[in-house]
Image 1 (cartoon, rainbow, N blue to C red):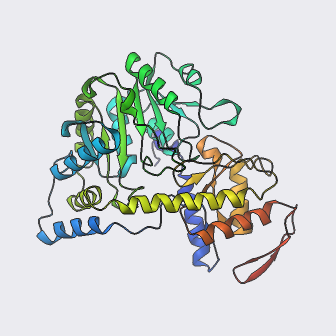
Image 2: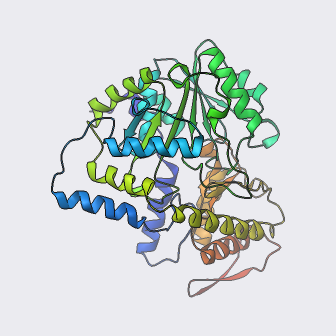
Length: 406
């Protein structure tokens, strides 16, 4: 017996692999620090809990419409008008039962034919390439020159061929924390609408920005009615509302694409859970102060991590302006990010994520969505393990450790 050729070529998620190893070490009583996490520690908003509890108490938990319950479609419509200054109709929205990731998968299933190309900007979220391959498309990676995190418009256009079906943009960006410039977004909107190429905006982090560097609304530059535009916006409640476990996301597109996505979704998940959708309604319509509190906490944590990283002698840092992450260049220590991440987990008991998985070898993705204590201690351990100019002794848990390698 064997699995399919397609399944054999889908990579493991690097974050899940390192998370599993970290869990094993913690179960052994090891004092592991997790700087690879992609979820904040913030509790679920009370308005979300109240809303889903009220739904549960009705005991009327049944199928819903594939596209989503009316109250959630209305909440997403209001959310889009508030945050994007764009009025959309419920017919332009599909709610997904697996978060933003599932929304992207439904979209790719709806628009990609075998051998169609999807341009993906590096550094990129690890699932983009695998989702494109799962629908028999071809991921085309554009890596910015000079090790920058934002490509030039000319670099992107140079990768366009007659087979290009879509361009994928994630800003604020996982894993770098980069927010793409208004100029680049404007140029991409004009180009994609003119050339009938889908511009897919993964905006899952769009409320989590720092230093007043707010990401621009993609609709600001659109010259077309939404039902004639090739813009697709992906979003969800996982990040800004710290509701990763609820798995509710959505896609906004023209009606033709939305209907195609609904058909795809109807055949693979039927509909999202009414309880989880109710929680999303509560989050979107409820008290929004938790989002701002999380944003400010992340900004504070980001500043702490930048300060700690600046104590290194041989890394290169580009300060993030959003998300939970930064992507420092550690290639002076080891050009293989996978080897380096394994080394740090083994020697320093610190979880990081290899940058090579995001298209940037020699880098490590570090998360600052944990505690201030974990950030400081985690970076101190990394410095001890890598920087021979630092003190060769450190306390990890209850043990004094001595660096005995070069």
